[in-house]
Amino acid sequence: MNDILPDSTAVWQHLEDTFREIAGAYGYREIRFPLLEQTQLFKRSIGEVTDIVEKEMYSFEDSGGDHISLRPEGTAGCVRAAEQHGLLYNRQQRLWYQGPMFRRERPQKGRYRQFHQFGLEAFGMAGPDIDVEIIELSVAFWRRLGLADCLTLELNNIGSAEDRRRYGAILGEYLAGRAEELDPSARNRIETNPLRVLDSKHPGNRAVVEGAPAMADCLSPESVEHFEALKDLLAAAGIGFTENGSLVRGLDYYNYCVYEWTTDALGAQGAVCGGGRYDGLVAQLGGRPTPAAGFAIGVERLALLLETLEKIPADAQFRADICIVVIGDGVTAESQALARRLRERYPDLRVVCQCGGGKYSQQVKRAFELNARLVAVMERAEGGSPQQVKLRSLDDGFEPVTVPLERCEEEVERLLSPDS
Ligand code: ATP
Ligand code: MG
Image (cartoon, rainbow, N blue to C red; front, side):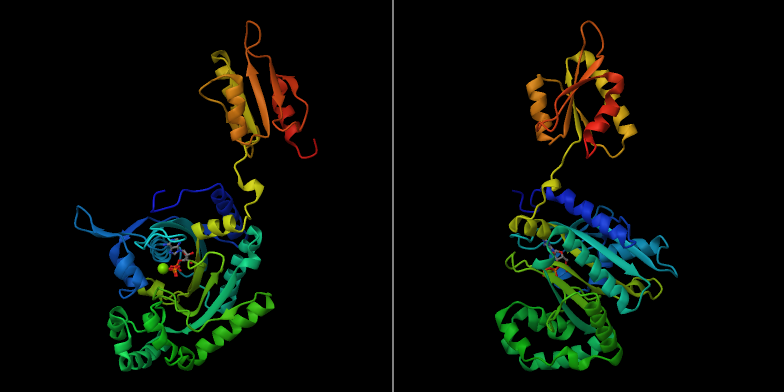
């Protein structure tokens, strides 16, 4: 195995199709943006003093001297692209994306250097209603995957940027008083980004953090109000959650509500989705002030979870509807013409026409590998082009039939229809 990325499994297509469908059902449209960006974009958004920017980015200077990084997450690039294309100007916008992200972390189960996210971002909506709608969308996704009972929602209120500045000063003072107990990297952050210390997994730091003044005591009335309203709406939607006061997230742009969906079935890498609100980011990157919220889902962890819990549905596997078996060189053109007609007439049908020839038994074996529901055998009739096609099922779903070539399409439709 390549230790950058695990090899993909049949479940991926299923995850992608399902997420696309659900995002569409909530009014999100897909946006694409580059894997490479100016390094400065990530420094300005994620924050200079974060693990991602300090340690995990793949950054380099290109031949023209530009400082470039592979994207470690999607929000910054999404905001940059949406802003550049005028998608955020004076309007609401719901966008989703998917694709690889890159972080130089220690590879282990559920943690890779190239991994994939499904993410979505909602712009122009300041109230807690959109936060709850986004969380509800993720619940709909878990339900469709059969994972709703295996995931827990943890929430925290991290306040406004102003609240955090105030809290940062109080926390910094407290940490400075116990600096000797902290490890060097936490000690370095007392001045630059004390909130990052809350996130630390180092046992010595954890002990110090346990006695730290609470963020909750520094929150402004507006922050409290937003969070309380959000919790009321979650309750009204029947979505359970637990509050976790030490959930801070590894990116600086968040404010108000942050959350994570976690499982205990994956060991240490238990977070499958993280999100929250980031009202300051669009303006920080040069746009007009625009409230925003979003989340990102780790696709590999989700695939692992489905495998671990043996929840991969049978139909997650690729299934061809019809596989055309081509016997002899003489029928290649007719076989391809039949495949073309079928695809034109039934655009949803998955039609695989065998290329490369081979014996009948070899081609049927390939049809099995494609999980084909139906096989059409094209064979040259005595002395001419094929007049007839033999249609058969691979699992004895129906008796083989031989039909005239010109009636083949209707017969295929009849045989594949659910009530035949
Ligand atoms: P973690 O605490 O596990 O390091 P994170 O807070 O760094 O996660 P986010 O930046 O919130 O992760 O990214 C959202 C999701 O992307 C995570 O919940 C996780 O499922 C997934 N993810 C993050 N980093 C990796 C990685 N290196 N390999 C695989 N998936 C990842
Ligand atoms: Mg991380």
